[in-house]
Image (tube, rainbow, N blue to C red; front, side, top):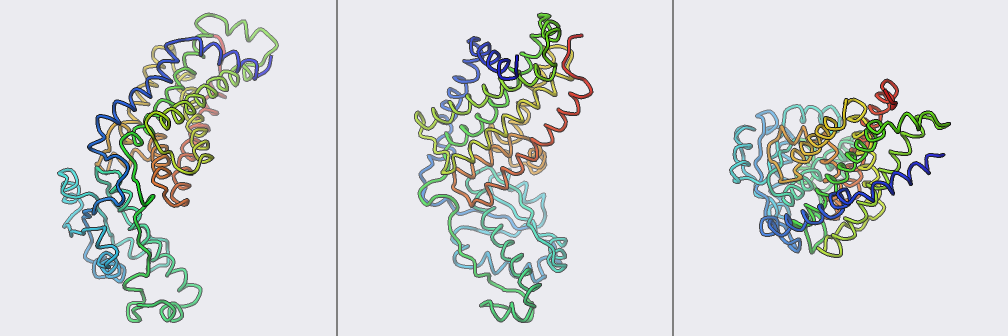
Length: 397
């Protein structure tokens, strides 16, 4: 008996359970339909040509505002191309900006710190801090525009290191020889995503529910592992000339195939039934689904190996999935900065951002960054599962 035989037997056994098929294949489609229909007026229909003007709150320290970087940022947001997309308001503090975001008075907030200025002056890579608002599309617009500004800063610093300040300033139109920086960067501004669409409510919740329900496949792993123990069949399997690792790997492989089948069904059916556009990168979609499957199986294995019985393991797994989905904005976008920071440690956050960036046809670098971070989270979970398996193991006691 090989891993393949155990895998196929496990897959056939699970597919015979009607409740599992309903919960993993039909329920997510129903939720996507309900949420997409109910909230379509709130999130849009995905056909807007250009997102609305983003109301941005700018929080700057006194040192940052008077620095070369601060002056360049003011010139950047005042340029005609950017003004059509951003409406900047100066805020006195981060708390004031957060309060305005909660009240809906702002769509996005940017924080320019003294540390950022020092990093740029020291020749290090600089990044802006920002706080996301409630509208996902406007968040993408704000992130894209300000990322382009910092990319231009970093590019100019790299040029100054290689060519020297004089060569760089003489070669770039609009350079300020006194400050040593281009006051108004020569950056092409365009609306992120396809020129004829943003993501709709159906697309948003299709991505969120796909990530959540693929993680729910980990619960089938938990039930499968405990079923063998509860029915005393694990002892018989271990008495056969099959290693415990083969048994464990076979069950994980079977449930992984189930999760991947679930992803295919949800993606295909949402595209056919609800018109969900998943983007132009099918291979990246497959990669994301593989990573979510890995996260689901490793997380389910960790919970199963550390729990004493199936009931407690199932409750714990369900609680983890719901919490991760909630703080990552799977049910509704959350504008609280602390929650957003915590969500960056979850599978759902990076899976959702990866799908949404492809739906908006974002630059490849942004998509790959999200996929890379998702891979990092999965690698951490896989390493934890390997350590726990070596210490606890899967055996009949």
